[in-house]
Length: 413
Image 1 (cartoon, rainbow, N blue to C red):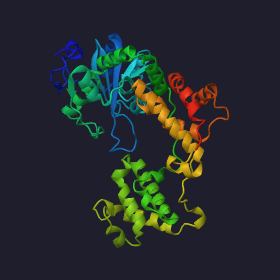
Image 2 (spheres, rainbow, N blue to C red):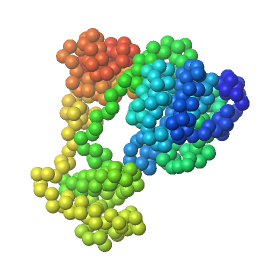
Image 3 (cartoon, rainbow, N blue to C red):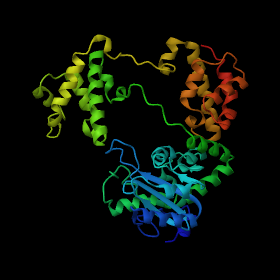
Image 4 (cartoon, one colour):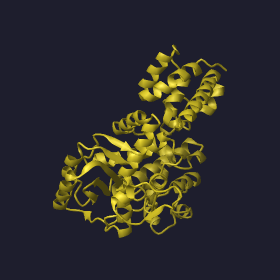
């Protein structure tokens, strides 16, 4: 099967064809500088956009770095690049990629680890985001490929440990197939967007993703421990914090996913039980395991520190927010704000349905809540448009929503 066959239209009544390996065979993994330079020369001779993807090991490793980079270009073929073996020196690749459009699926997931390798797109097309704006209900890569191109991709290795070496052949096939059809999929989605008058919307969204700043680190990341709602006292929260921070330090040093060092559930159980001795700790689930016994002293030390922490240093049971409170509390705290939010949500839902876009893509929910909680004193369309623009809304979003929000912000309880 050649590439022309794979990108051709498929009759609607035909069953999707399962792809188990790339049309040109499984590429060898590029793991030395000479082979990388040769691959870059071939990529430079190719034409059109670059299909790009990465594989990480987030469920196994602490650092969210790329353990494999996949690239495909028409006329050049598919390349699987091992940045670890190359000591993250991908300068020749960055030179080739600096002036060509990149096609990615869910680009925001891949761009940070690509940036760590010195790879930054001059422009991009995000097939997941394009699918959302085009009105597709399900926008996974496999689903879009099946619906629009008539092929089915095996998706069995997305959560694999990609730090493993050597990588199994079926994993390499999976990785190569992730970029095999990205450019044909891009072309289909671009045509859909253009026909619906949404292509400019998509281009604005792609540019926002491309130029987005890294997220601001959370001030108290330990508060995201799963199950922390079970802890009701400052002393118990101090125990969670102490165990979380000790686990994070160990995970960072060993480059292991924190959950593989100690599950969140074990942290919560220890904070609730407050064990005082090795025997008491090892009676709890997880802590009695052979590996965990090596860390018994470490965990007990953290629990003792939390137990003896001065009152003034205990964490609060309430979390300070830099924005409005949860919407379910608005009716009590500010009935007019609740009325504004309800009116705005109704208006945006109607606009989203009319244009066949998800309401969360029409306007960021956080921006909507902030605007409704503390609206501008001037609720004219022009003033609301300025507020939305300052909050990061794209021009197409402002054009569609400013008038409706202007009216919604005048609602009263």
